[in-house]
Every structure is written in structure tokens, then in C-alpha cells.
Image (cartoon, rainbow, N blue to C red):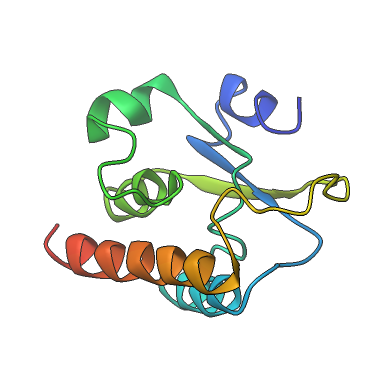
Length: 123
């Protein structure tokens, strides 16, 4: 309900979760960039909701392998309303990140960030 209700009630086009903390250095850097550019505190939080109107206007979900963040940045540039809500996260039960070890995961996140920076400038 925290994610979907603002969209159903017409208060927002996108709702982005804010995790209690970030995990990696690359996430912290990406978060600072996103906060400066579009006011989003936790752009890499995988807990997001998008209105159908947003999806239809932007036309795709994630071409840049950016964990769903590309749609959020493009939508902001197109004037869609984005709000943020705090979300609770359970501690990880497994020890392996789906992004790989610390070096690989940071690399993937930096790569996605740079793709977004370059792509969004062209909009």
C-alpha cells in the first residue's frame, strides 16, 4: 500500500522506496548524484512502483541494466511526479549478493550510473 496507493490516488506517477541504509560505496556515490540531480535519496532501491501512464510514455523499463533506475530518471526529465517512502528491509539471509563480490557489484553499479548520466543528458 505504501507504494501503490499514492499512484492509485493520483498523488504520484512513481513511488521510490528509501532503505534504512546503503550497502556499497558505489550506491552512496550514486545516491549523492541522484539527490543532487533529481532529489531522489535512494535511486537504487529495488522497491519502486510506476504508473502505467509513466511506462507507456517512456516506452520501456530498463535498457541500460540500471536496476530499474533509468525509467525513474527519464520520467523525472519528462515531468512525471516522483515521491519517496521509507521502507523496512530484512537482513540478508544469504551471504552472496546477486551482483557478485564487492568489486564486481561496485563495478556494475558504477557502470549503470555512467550509462544513465550519458543517456539522460541526451533526452
